[in-house]
Amino acid sequence: MINFRKAGLLIGTLVIPALIFVFLKMFGTNHYDLPYYHPEVNTDGSVVVNGRDTLFYTVPAIALKKPDSSAGNVVFGQGQITIAGYLPEICDDSCKVVVNQLERLSALRENIHNLKFLTICQKWTAGNTDYPQGINTAGWDVVTGSEAEIDSVLQKVLKLPTKLPGSKTNSFESRLVLIDAKGHVRGYYHVTDTEETDRLMAEIKILDYEKKTN
Image 1 (cartoon, rainbow, N blue to C red):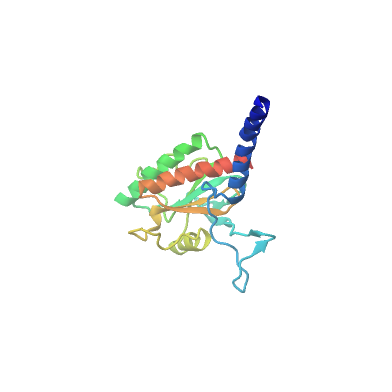
Image 2 (cartoon, helix red, strand yellow):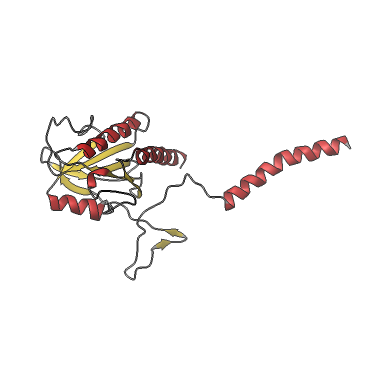
């Protein structure tokens, strides 16, 4: 009788956790999965699928200029996570908040070596102390262009929304976009809000973890 009890206890110890795992795997929601933005659509407006998988927009290369006026082609994906955004030539108070948050984010590169930054600006002023530390160095690209070129990149290529929920401003400088290692958009953030920056930092780590486990 005692042996039967021991066997039952052993079976319960092994089987019940396995059943819970299977249940969560099949029916649970993984709250650490980040959304994908901008599904691809056919000419009739229907979403493009490959088997059961929805296909999503892949950010194409950006062809602007580097601060030295040479070609500044920027390619996304290729195993690198990218944080992209815009900074004006003259940095006002709200811009300085963004700069501070960018410097916080750049500290992640010490442990996430495939993390890079892209800053788009209309005019680059060398030695501008308002810019983040480390900008225009290895792993932090800067490209410039005309107002029309920049607006096209921000709205048509990076697809930055004209206004984020809860945002009190429409300025592009306060917003960042997160692009994963395959070139897909995985998030938009209003980084004058510290909580948004915290969320971005957490989601960068999630993408890095996904890449390592895949």
